[in-house]
Image (cartoon, rainbow, N blue to C red; front, side, top):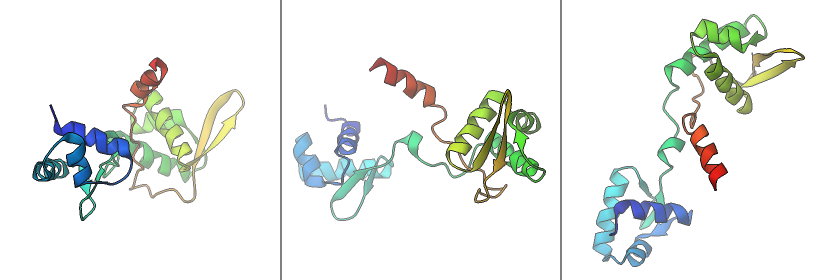
Length: 161
């Protein structure tokens, strides 16, 4: 009945560090059982031990920052950095040179602009032009766009509720 995942959900819902005794009391466990279950969840990366007996939930898997950007994002970023040396550039040119889907490239560039890595220059009746922000990361360190796979799914869940 007391699945370990229920502990993770409960700790995450608290949005604050909880103690081992709180976990034991909530789930009707002996303190030793709670310690054992929490230890396994910490080893699995679901919970974080803050020292003492304070426990918090780890970020959800899709919210965790990746170590580096996926290959398509790396290619887009390198092409954008190269084209930026020559002046403003459109998304279509980046997509063609990076050999990526135009829609994906536009979504990534829009995300980069939201993160203030790019400047957007709208043109009436024509495609937007982009420039790298002066404080943007180098061409070798592409910003990683996270949550891209879940954005449509989350949008659908929000409409149903």
